[in-house]
Image (cartoon, rainbow, N blue to C red; front, top):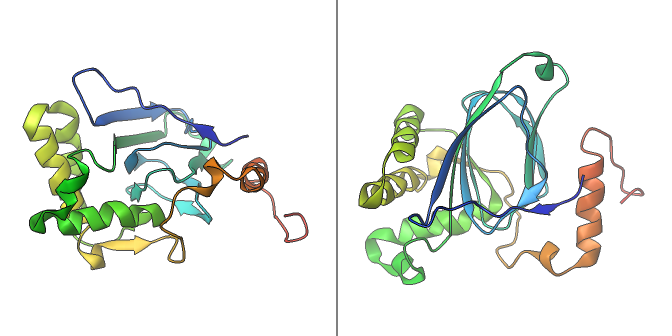
Length: 204
C-alpha cells in the first residue's frame, strides 16, 4: 500500500463536499488531500493511522482531520466477517472555504484555530455528539448558505477544549513534509505496508 493523493469530486455548484458511505467492509486507501475532513463512524470498528498516530476506532466516533494529513481506516479481521457492517459520513472542505481572511474575524477566530489544530488530528470526546451528527446529516441534504451555516455550527462545537482529544500533541504546524521529502515518503510507505505488523526501530 502506498500513500495516495485523493482528489475530492466536487460538483460545479459546490465548494464543500459531503458523502455517506456504506460498505461490507471499509474501503479506504492510505491517502491525504488538501481538504480538512470530518468523519463520523456510523457503524464499524477497527484500526486507524493518522499522521504518526496509531490507534483504534469504534462505532459512533467523530474525527476531525487536517489538510494534508495522511490517514487510513481499516477493519480488523474479526470485523470483516460481519456483512454490511461499515458505514460512515464524511464532510470535506478547503481550510479557507470561506476565504483566508475570514478566520481573522473576531467571531470566527476560534473556528480558524480549530481548522489549524486539525493538522494534529482530533477525536470528539465530550459535548452533545448527537447534535453534531444531526447537523452532519442535514448538511448532506442542504445547499447554499444553509450548508455553510451548518458547517460553521459543527466546527464551532470543536472550539470547546473539553470536547476534543488531540491525537498528535507533538505534531508540527508547518507544511506537509511528505510532499517534498522522498525519504519521509519511504518511511510512510513502509508504515503503510506493515500496518498489521510490529515495526522496530532498526526496520525504520
